[in-house]
Length: 215
Image (cartoon, rainbow, N blue to C red; front, side, top):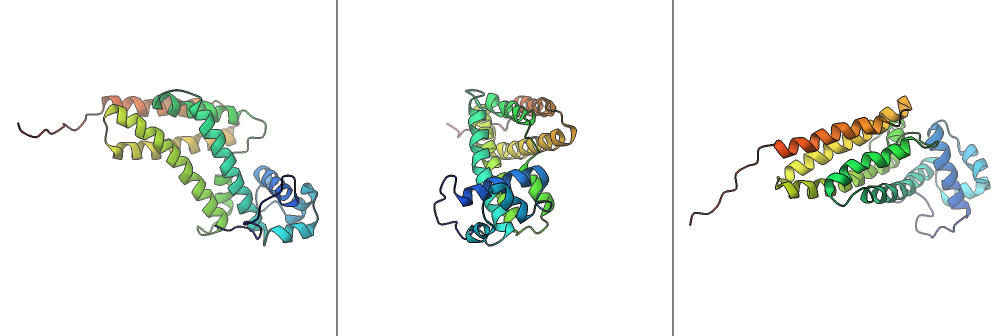
């Protein structure tokens, strides 16, 4: 998905395009899309207004590009943090909430940039909403990988893993939203406690009998 005129060119570290993306991401994450004007982005980036129009066809294109870049960085951070939390799928699944708590406790936590953006953009086919949706799809896919491993170890059906992954994403996004409103990092621990109950329930769930061919 092309979001800028310069999407096919290599960005020079510290160049005008990168500085515009840095400024847009910081200002929009802290204050919102509609409250952040192009002039403020250009001013914070230290570039000329002409640079904005050289690299981006519109403010929305800049925002979408900034969110795409944030998606890559956030997912790398979240995946790495999760994988460090354990050597088995249960530990990694629950460890996700420890990763989130660290984020919630940071000074620059302002909620999920993608949920925030979706709350400001109504059209489902808007490029900004598309980037936000793709981010959640990537997050769900990573969670699903861990759920698949967990259910495989239990001998459960793959449909159970799909359901558990969707429930897990709701717990993650719910924790993010409550932490943003309440300012309480321990919201992640509350979500983790609920998540642990979901995992424990799978151990007691009746399994379909394995049918064997007559001998």
